[in-house]
Image 1 (cartoon, rainbow, N blue to C red):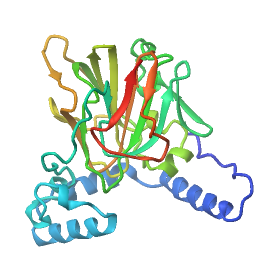
Image 2 (cartoon, rainbow, N blue to C red; image 1 turned 45 degrees about the vertical axis):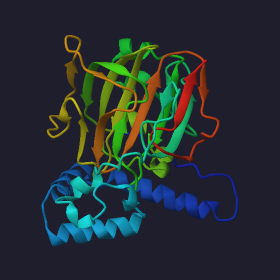
Image 3 (tube, rainbow, N blue to C red; image 1 turned 180 degrees about the vertical axis):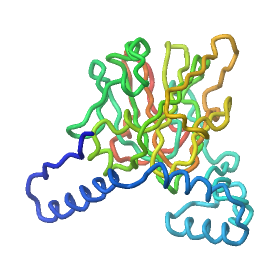
Length: 301
């Protein structure tokens, strides 16, 4: 197993202290029983605990600054389980879809990275890249369709809305559940764990759009109990430890731009892949910037 990056950054006041803290937080993840923790938290999050569940939800809202004014319902006591709260819908009109945008942002969260795929290499963080083939569960033929294409990696923090929407219209071609690790996917871990998004458990959804194939990958993480899609339900309720694949070529599953396509039960990351072509990204986008579902992500030019 490849260890976390160990070289400290060059000087700069408190940077060595911050670097050491970050390295420790990443390093301890190699030792944690991540699958056991994830299963335990998943069971607790699905439990109808009455007043105890409401107390946990209220604590979570205060701890992470969740905006309940845009949620439906707004009352924390109305949620029977923590999962119900975490996957809460938004009030009508809370996320208007930008008109005339070729690609919409599919989630609330922040930008990890975005840009051009260098051959088959996707940029993760300084010093770290991973291949499209690895991300897509070893499917070299599928990965080849995105060589030199475009990607976006978007991080959903605990406070965010955790439903995932279609960046553009698409017809579902297939889905894979790829077994893997369950590292955290926060920015510190992305900087410290090589190939993070291609080594964690993930669900790969393949669509056909007006410009050809595109992929949306739901990446699992520590304590992410489940990943679900609207056409399948929970995909990883069982973890058999082997790659599983579903094909939909004979079924007419088409989703409109902006439609919900899935959700996380506890937070994580999505990775989007698009084929080669000239992209005009949203001029306001930059790594670390906050984003909202429905805003313009990019246009084909």
